[in-house]
Image (cartoon, rainbow, N blue to C red; front, top):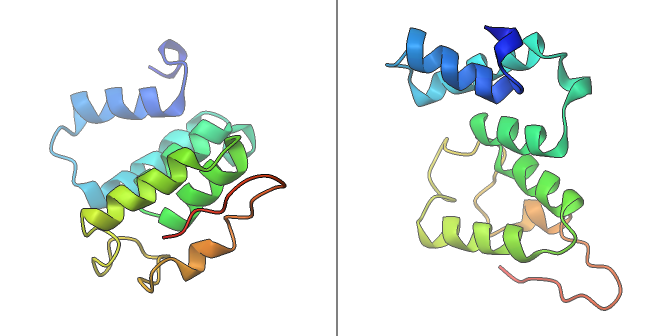
Length: 122
């Protein structure tokens, strides 16, 4: 089935829908790693691939890092973080292993505005 798919996440979704429709959210990281390895490993990944993989792994800090370094402004990462905050998803224990729940201090280092930009406040 690999030759029929263009991306690792397309293959992973197809495989899980047909072979493991009852897959649990906490198993997605393992399945994502298997899919990435079938499509050339971490070295062949694009920025979008990195964002999707970090999302499936529940690594909010990595998701935000990829978004901030890839996009030309902070609009999407800032609003995504704001939505997660208002949905009470940032302080949920164990939900994001790398988020310390202290109001964004860990992510502050990722938000380095260039000249003429305004740093978002959380």
